[in-house]
Amino acid sequence: MMKKNVLIVEDNRASMDALVELTRECDSTSVIYCATNSAEAYKYAMENRIDLFLIDIMLDNKVQNDVSGIFFADKMRQQERYKFVPMIFVTALVDQAMVAFHKLHCYGYIEKPFDFDVVRKTIREALQYPNKDERKDQYFYYRKDGILYSVEMQRIMHAETHRRVLSMHLLDETIELPYMTCNSLLEKLNGHDFLQYSRNGILNRNYIDYVDHTNRYIRMKNGDMLELGSVMKKRFMQELKYGC
Image (cartoon, rainbow, N blue to C red; front, side, top):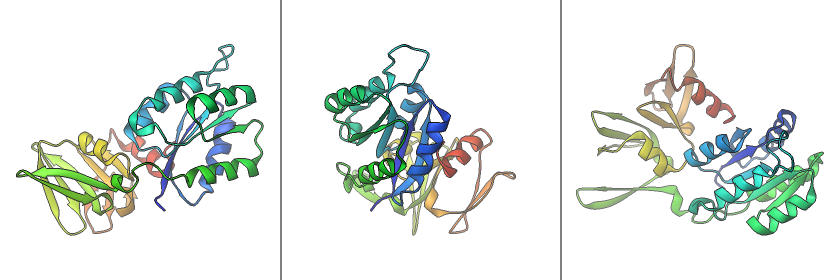
């Protein structure tokens, strides 16, 4: 089964840490992204492929009767790629969860304080939920000289742009795509284990051999050496480790 990415939206640090640890115990988890508010969560969701959402209904304790987590979930449901992605709500008020359950078709809900066994079971079951068009999403399509080609995403090791040409390095060949940017490629790859390591480069985490964050270089399993961008360094290391 494909490794899956989880986005946890929780403003309480202790609850966040507990959910991260419980989610990390699931073998099918690839990256865990963490956000403390809707704006941060939206950014993660748009820049990556999220396969499971864990959303605290109350994201701002300073606001009376806050339900900003439900508003965020509704916003995600309006995105075509997240119409059917499982969501688990986190709440101390079951009535709120039930409203969200019916309105937004969430997978389930987790009550506070946490029953760790229940949380583990709920997350594991949700991660087994098959995403729509999962097989189709494993391929990257591009057109060259009027012909449409497809590439299995996991064959892509890394890619970088130079003088308006993107060089995409596969296991056995290099493909050059004029006028394609790293951002547009990253969007098409839709978060399948790909990270941006510099302004002009992205890589597949599965082909990383070693990262020297002090001297800012990355050695890939095929021997290629990539320079870790100073601007992207902090974010890259966070996403490489946990995504939070």
